Image (cartoon, rainbow, N blue to C red; front, top):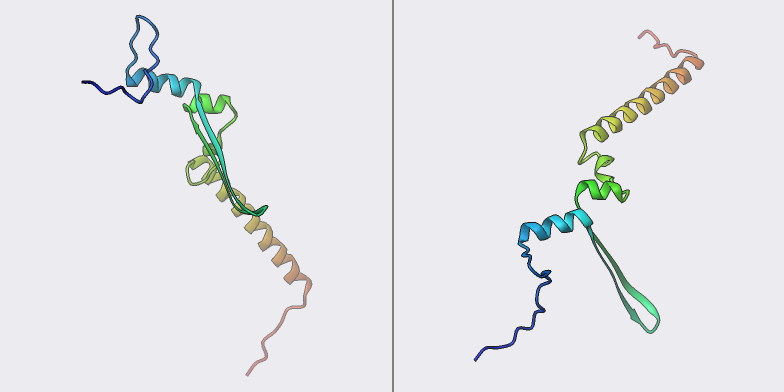
Length: 114
């Protein structure tokens, strides 16, 4: 006696077979978005809201969709880290220049001989 399966039959077009690599290639090529919100309310008072967003796609597909956060995140991109250091250096140079300009306006303090 066989038990009926609870899972639906996998989608396989007639005359073709799909293996895991084919499915993964298709998912990365087309992209998959999974989104969901969880809200817990008590008497019309919002206690908790969780928003879930998951995008699975290839890098090329993500760039095509306008998702490129890894290029600007200094933790993930060496170019972004260099840009962040250059900006930080420029800000420090400006602060030093401002401090030096402020100190040249004031009369020089002299130490009195002991």
